[in-house]
Image (tube, rainbow, N blue to C red; front, side, top):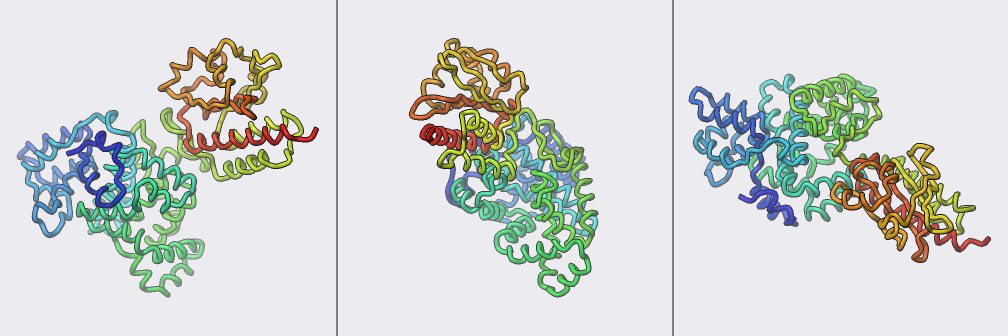
Length: 511
């Protein structure tokens, strides 16, 4: 079978091509889990139940066994309803052969994007079990397996094309772009349609496919339920609305919806607990359970904490970590995490600043007035530290003209141009340079040491801004030194264009 590394340059554009590619990806299994299951398969004292329980510690192994057992070539009419049935169909010998084919890797050698998705699925399972399994005790296995595998169609994509999923998240979740347009551009198909098709191809539990069908074909019912769920301040009115629509009540009360609700909670909590998106899933769960919203929220937070105690990893994000921080805090940034994208309010302010820069005739009285606006615009697009430098009359020295997010003593700092070939190149013509861990060593020897002391991280942007080919300003910015948000990088570039246009307008002013 193909590996993810051999697939990364080939992006299908049809559902059939996606299924063929993603079905061929062998999912890596953590070494510890791989070893435990291998030993159990060789132990004649172990029951199928014991082996199945042990396998469930590794969701990727659960999927691998189920899709192998359900493969149409095995001649089975009905798909396996549980992991235990799947192992029984394969037999211990074939299960062991399958295990031997799957790569066993240390966690640090498994791509982060893949492990993060697995963690979300584990969190979703904890939410579904904690909220619904006791209420539907006879169906707890269906709830558990369905919620664990709901996002599994995306797992092999996180190995083969992690950047596509990251781009989708940035553009759809954070920028608010149309999911239909973004998915058409990135995947060639609807992501929900692809997940449903792959789940049907693998013959996953019916509750998995049911969840995707709700999102694709039953949006009207979902919207109706969400509207009623918003009336959580008046439970009696909610009850009356549900009683008035028996079809909607039957639709909502289907046990299979627990899989969708658990995953909706886990996915929305990845961004934050107090977003409208998360509140919608909490309210819908409250309506389903006929419990007060506050109780459901408290239980969801407890479920998240339980999930984190069992499954959290140091280099992955778990929403339970946000519960110990002030309520408005967003996802905690780790050393290797990109900076969070600018908030909606920040982007609105950024657009306002850009509009001011582009105003004709110029509203700026002098260069200090203009560069102050330029600095504020860079800050609004998500940059945490900004320095704008301008050359002196002799063009021998660059002086810090404006600073943002930096100590006051940085103001007025000077850098010799002749001592840095990088500064000379940037001042020769408008250019943008992005410093990364891959090229920092290359440029470190060519930049003034004092400048590197100010921007000591491994990720920053340098852009020379000019008018009619003559560089007037050198802008340097970063987001605390860590990996940059791609949204902010793009906004940085657009800000530079606005400033250059403003410089052109300013040069034409009547004095």
